[in-house]
Length: 171
Image (cartoon, rainbow, N blue to C red; front, side, top):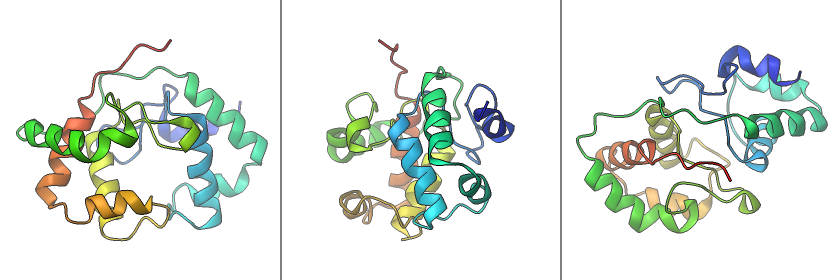
């Protein structure tokens, strides 16, 4: 019932929008989703669109919505980039991202590390751009050190690679 309001933007399936304006929330770790909602509500993450929703939800409603979103299936129809620099993106991912986000982009719920597989290219590109520019107040400090020297081309390449990570079957 709580997710019904969320589905107005993120869709009933939780797949958001391939143009990157709204992220995929389906199958994401519940802890990650709750953390993002709490960060938005507390001002640790700027998201004017989500702010009124995060402010109106109780802690239990956030937990319930996040638990439900986690049960939704990922779609292989997520937005992807041009595919021109996927090889470079893989090199960057292997070197800089894999140790935290996992070989398959599965993330780590216990450490609040988001799952990347199935996420839209444009959304990830925008988030990395905002982190690098210092606009994501809740960005991980170690991750910031890694992506700070990335060029726009590097961010595009790694975002495109991550958007193409195969979707693993849930156990």
